[in-house]
Amino acid sequence: MTDKNQPIVGIIGMGDMGRMYAKRLKAGGIETIYVCDKPESHESLKKELEGTGIIPLPNGHAVSRISDFIIYSVEAAAMTAVVREYGPSTKIGAVVAGQTSVKAPEKEAFEKYLPADVGITSVHSLHGPTVTTEGQPLIIIHHRGPESNVKMVEDVFRSFKSRYVHLSYEEHDSVTANTQAVTHAAFLSMGTAWNHSASYPWETARYVSGVEVVKVNITLRIYSAKWHVYAGLAMLNPSAQIQIQQYAKSVTELFKLMVENREKELSDRVWESREKVFGWKRNEEPPIPSSSSTSTSKGEEQIRDPILLSEDILNQFSLGSRSTEQQNQNQNQSQSQSSSPNSHLSLLAMVDCWSKLGIRPYEHLAVAGTPVFMLWIGVAEYLFRSPTLLSSAIQAGLADRIHRPDDIEFVVAARGWSECVSFGNFDLYKRRFEETSNFFSPRFEEATKLGGRMIKAIQDMQSGKRTDSQSNVQ
Image (cartoon, rainbow, N blue to C red; front, side):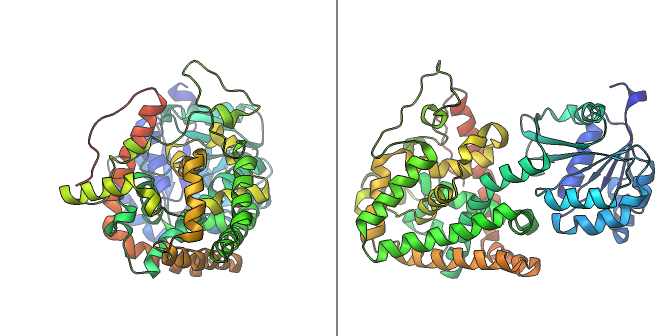
């Protein structure tokens, strides 16, 4: 794209993602970028962007009238109101996109409030503002206008070095619901459970290493983000609402089977969900392909490399500083996990939910396989991949009393999040989220550092590399 052929880019909404888009597009060579935020933020935005070459305007009307490619980067819940206000001012022949995680409200707003002579080619970067764009999925949704608009959008984002994935609006919302709704519900519920039990999981030997620290880290990473990132998907995506309700039902029903000691029913249900979601028969050890093997669409789940690392490598990661004596104790505990295993109710219910709804989220790895997403679903695969670990979790659910109080809190939390979503009240969601977020906030920085190291280790493993570096965060 030569400078004279570059479109003028406009961004409406300068939150974390809007700022990231503006700065990275500017650094990537886009010459003219106009931006705006809420009118009352105009003066502070001018001071912040002084000398950057990014031009703040008073409002979305001003941005819309002179930009060739306009990106609405606002919260999903606010999309309709913002497009209703600024959409009619859109320049003739311009192309409009929305950087939102749930697309149904965006599609409806664009169709209703944008002039008929405006193209719609939307986008969605499947990562947060602090993650590198290189190699990450960038969804492109061409909904209205000439095909040349797609080429223009691809050229605008060329400097991101992202991986373009072309979907429809409906396909986008289906993929994001199938890969994120249940995982969000699971880890949000974990955090709420620990909050309500007034215990930090890293302060007990049960959650400081191995796969347990992955669960804790994912929970902390979710609660360190903005609440609206998860609220929009949960309450505005109809498929997500159904899945969150089923997840709470799965949690409740599995827990009842545990406390009622109905071993055969519990065992049959867990193994059945394993086969439906992963394709692995009862007690079957999934084959691990050689480096030269290739996947096929049929039975792809059965010949994939495992997502997560081995237990030995996972044990290199920990939350908090531990003395040598504590490390030895944790190693001994890891070696004798059969004496006090975890039921992993949150993960059993995750796969049970997918099974009941006929969802196979691993089929979406090619589309939504971001490093953070790989962590989210990889932790469930880690448990279900090993017949020994899965059998141990089933027996723990029936007999273990050490984790039972945590499981009770988790059941209450999962049902609470389901009810919160069913009410459709964003203020209630925000209050519930921030209550737990404030509880965990002292450890967010550590979780971010540790999560980055985990992701790098997973990427190294997937590219055939191994790291022997000690990854304990001090």
